[in-house]
Image (cartoon, rainbow over all chains, first blue to last red; front, side):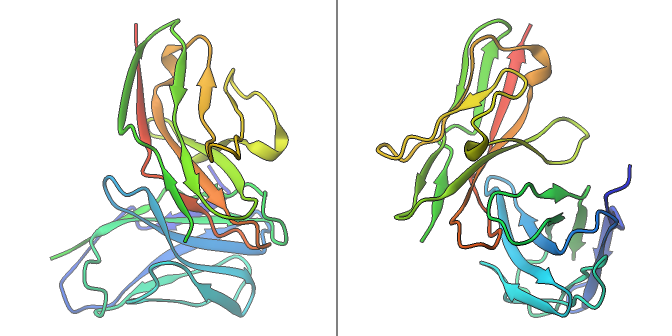
Amino acid sequence: DGGITQSPKYLFRKEGQNVTLSCEQNLNHDAMYWYRQDPGQGLRLIYYSQIVNDFQKGDIAEGYSVSREKKESFPLTVTSAQKNPTAFYLCASSLAGGSSYEQYFGPGTRLTVT
Amino acid sequence: AQRVTQPEKLLSVFKGAPVELKCNYSYSGSPELFWYVQYSRQRLQLLLRHISRESIKGFTADLNKGETSFHLKKPFAQEEDSAMYYCALNPGTGAQKLVFGQGTRLTINP
């Protein structure tokens, strides 16, 4: 089951700690995305990147940070500034340059902060 | 601001009956609309997009700009259609900034 991998599947952290979620893809896609999924709210875009070394904030970027040093990798850091970090996080990738391209999703990481 | 509304959180129909999942959007321009589906224990995946005007697994969706809707329809539901369905909008600015609806869980009863 290649394509996009996210690790770990479950992650537990104490409040006040930063935590980094991994996302890797072998689809040769230029664009990558991070979404947050909460019950009853669908998916909300946190950050996206259309090319290496460049990324933009999505709708709910506060308390999160990302990097895009390699085409294959787009890690997301949930910082202690994120007020409600417990959620299901989904990473996706797509071809870039077109608004109708399909996004391919990873299996997700469930983060629990106590 | 762009917004996608799926008014039904849960929808249950019998096998062989028609099914319609509603999706309404608010956007002043010409959006790209999609339906994504997540089957049990599988990843979220694209079902269809309005620009393709295609039928996938018997599902179709027509973009109605006058009613700002993109309802998903299938004339005869099958048990394997049970899944979580998300309607999504891309404002079409060149970047893929999808705005998702809340999702509808469809259950097909035998």
